[in-house]
Length: 318
Image (cartoon, rainbow, N blue to C red):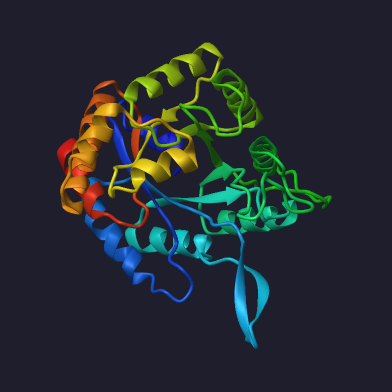
C-alpha cells in the first residue's frame, strides 16, 4: 500500500514509522531483526531502508603498498526491503539515489521493486563521495533528485528509457522526497531550497519527509512556507534523539542544523552516557507530543539501526 494511502486511511491519526540502515557486508541480518522486533508493537505502516553510496577502501597489497578499490559497504537494500515485507507484513520504502547509479541501473532497480510488490520509494540525490568537494553524478546518472523523481514518474506512465514497447501493466510508485526545515547545506537560502522542493513535487513527488530537526518551530515555519508556495503533499517530520555527547558537534557539522541552547545545556550537564541518552529521549518525546498534538500525519524516527531509545519514545507518545 502507498504511504499516502496509509495516511488517508488513518483519518488524521498520527502514524509511527522509522528508518533503518542495512548491516555492513559480512554481518547477519538477525541484528536488524532484533532491533525491528521491539518497534512492531507500535504498528508502523511502513519502514524506510537506506541505500549507501559506493566508497573507496584501501586494500593492503604488502610491501607497504595499498590498492584503492571502489565498493559498497552496506549493500542489500532491496533484499532487506523484501525480507522485512515478508517477515513482518509491513510496507517498506527503499531509498533510491542519484549518486552512484546510472539511469539504466535505476530503472532495473525500480522494475525489481515493482515485481516484489514494493509500492513506495524515497527519491534522493545522495551525498558527494568522501573525496569529492561537490556531488558528481555517475556518467549516465541523474544529477538532481528532481530528475530522479521525473524518471520514476515517467515509469509510472509506462515510459521506459530506451525501449519502444506496448505496456499494459504499469508501475504505480508512491514517491517520497526529502525536505529541509533549516535548508539543504548547499542551498543559498531556505526560500531557494523550497523552490527546489516545489520542483520535486511538480515532477511527481507524493510526500515529503524532513531532515532531522530539534526545534519544532522550524518545522512549523517550514510547513507554512511550503504551503504558501503551493506544496500541498503531506510533510512528515523526521526525528532523531540525541544519543551521545559527540552528537553536539557531529550533527550540526554534517547536517548544518542548529541545536537549541536548552538541549545543549542539558547534554553538557550530563555525567554519564546513560544520562545523555535519557536527555535525548525526553527531548524527542516532548518534540513528538507537540507535533502529534498539531496533527502531523506521521512521526518518522531515524533509528540508525538501534531501537531501544526509539521504543521508549514511541511508548510515551503512541
